[in-house]
Length: 73
Image (cartoon, rainbow, N blue to C red; front, side):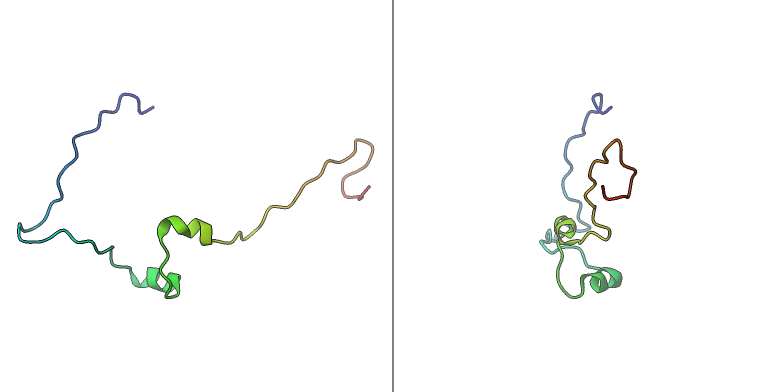
């Protein structure tokens, strides 16, 4: 799908003033993001690792051909 895509050359960081330094600070969290983190910093790539499954998968076994489903046979 993206085979014909040609990337442009990287652009330099745009600053509103030549005197303004490039910041190493991360983006400011919104009030909702702060509340969701419960005061603990959560790096976005760690959110999936920190999440708990709401509905964990259950093991499914094979049903013998001569037994109806749900009989425990």
